[in-house]
Length: 198
Image (cartoon, rainbow, N blue to C red):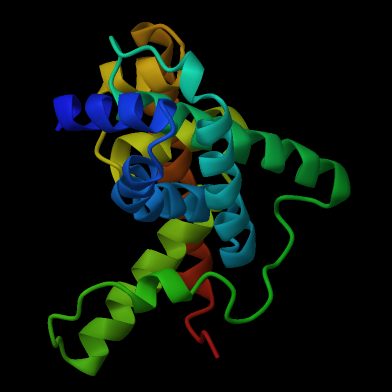
């Protein structure tokens, strides 16, 4: 895969539009899921995907063929999302309530295994809790947690994407996980004292 991507990047850099279209096809969903998890907004995530590919296209001449293309494109996408979060923080609180229905479309795309309605409710409530908890993560933990647990990247890969030492990544993954655990425990306590969700 790495060889194929490096070859496509080389062809795209030399002006081959089909090669670039293939790179877009390979990565658009992955970048969308990354952006959607970080920004929790479908429109912003779609914008981030377009901006990512625009930056990839205009910076192809800077791509170092000795590094994995996936690392390079994830770095561009992650940095874009971090920038958007920083700009957003200046406009409104990250803890602001999301409008009804916002953020549910990603789960609608998850494969169905035909569970009972009761089990589906429990699973979707759990996913919703996790999504809300991830949304409240401090910025410096958010990207590492998303890359580690939702994109299944190794600590070394995350280190390459974010351009930070593995030790820093390891610490942030650990702290981010602790933060999530505490957040979910708080939600459980609130839920048990107020069992009616209607």
